[in-house]
Image (cartoon, rainbow, N blue to C red; front, side, top):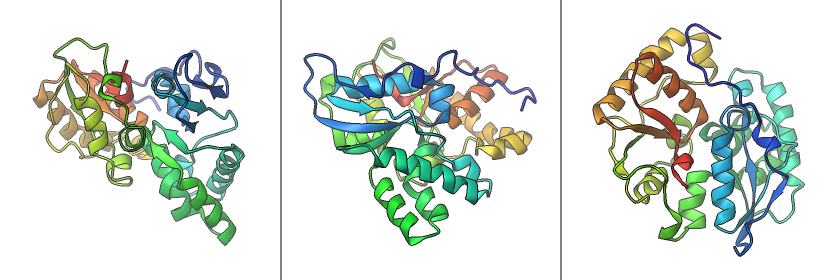
Amino acid sequence: MGKGRQIPEIAKKFLRDEYPEVISPPAGVEKRMRVAFFAGCATDFVFPEVGKKTINFLTNQGVEVIFPKGQGCCGMPVFGSGDLATAREMADRNVAVFSELEDIDYIVTSCATCGSALKEGYTTYLADTEERKKKYEEFSAKVKDINEFIIDILKPPPEAFHTALPQGTKVTYHDPCHLVRYQKISSQPRQIIKSLPGLEFVEMREPDRCCGMGGSFNVQYYELSKKIAEHKMKAIADTEAEIVVTACPGCMIQLIDNTIQKGMPQKVMHVIELLS
């Protein structure tokens, strides 16, 4: 796994250990709806701050968040590598855990890869029986990416969007493949960024060009993944942005690795981390 990679450390405290299963809106905030949160491995164990920002923003906007601890990996690395039998077991478990929850309006995730797996991966690759297909379709219909959920469903008032970043901070955005290609979500994260007073948004060249992560592809073909990343790093550098933002923890790992190795000054963040 090494090969000179600059890999973020495993978190000292996992996200699942930071919260109870039911997180209600704070006192004085009226409950508007109830959603379940699918954390995903990278958010839970590597970037818990992304999960914290997600949960805190939602609850402050009147959303009660259910964080079922029985959830596991979405299975994308497993069925993406061809082990469909094991992936079905993982999918069945996740579907069962979330199906047991009552009065859930949506299932929200901050991970583009998880969202892609839950929305279309289960039904496309793992639904080998009519029973599984029906269960997966009912489950998948409730899944929403956090950017999609905030802009298209929650629709917070303008005053909900504020950031702790200094005025005039220049930000650019990288489209994760699993978000823009598989879920067709592109405008929503940009709307969130542009809604934050004081930030300057600069579009990079070919923002939807792959960063080279590709999950297990990055592990097996690391040198090739770095060559793919060369285009992305040049596009980021040309913007002269201080922060490169994305919506996938996998892309974050790749962008962190390559910006550090090239001595680039850009900080890598998730869209939800911009919100305060």
